[in-house]
Image 1 (cartoon, rainbow, N blue to C red):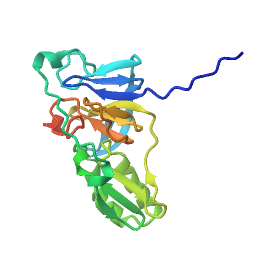
Image 2 (image 1 turned 90 degrees about the vertical axis):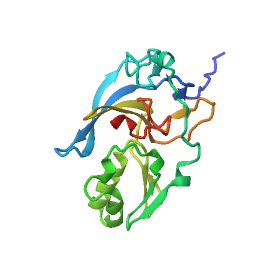
Image 3 (image 1 turned 120 degrees about the vertical axis):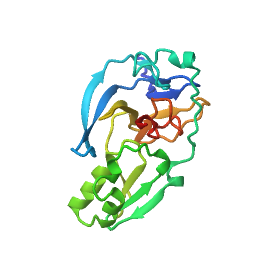
Image 4 (image 1 turned 180 degrees about the horizontal axis):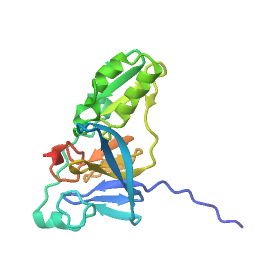
Length: 225
């Protein structure tokens, strides 16, 4: 008699521990290097190195680890206050809409971390309003999807379908010109808060790793200060 295979649900997830690190399960970790023009404007991403990780590992959330990006316990020594202040409502509930001839843009400013992709050139809002052919449409979509935070989400106006990059469930350590950036979580990873509730699964979000965000666990750009 053959043994039946038992299908298991994916364990790929991130749990935010109370005043402690992110507990990561079964997610690859790599570096994403921000590519900038001469004036410092971000225009693209370059893949950095892959980091060797165990199936389960912990990433620093307080910004004081001696073994960054991994947790080394300093959150307990400094009395880190990791209280989560981000809302649990759906992204679309607080998103503003911009409608163009080919695209519809949703913008939820609460996810902004000042990465800067959206303001390059004329800005994505104007680009969406003026994108009326294939080339201008593709350019606007790339600029929107390069934003790692998921603040901006774009839809094809004709089909109503969301346009997104296809990501493996993973985490990238953002490397900015000034130094370390946020944790870029890709591919609709399950993120569970310290109170056990689950945030909306999204294709792109950025988690704070400096400990200073006012929108924990998400990054609000405080590391830039």
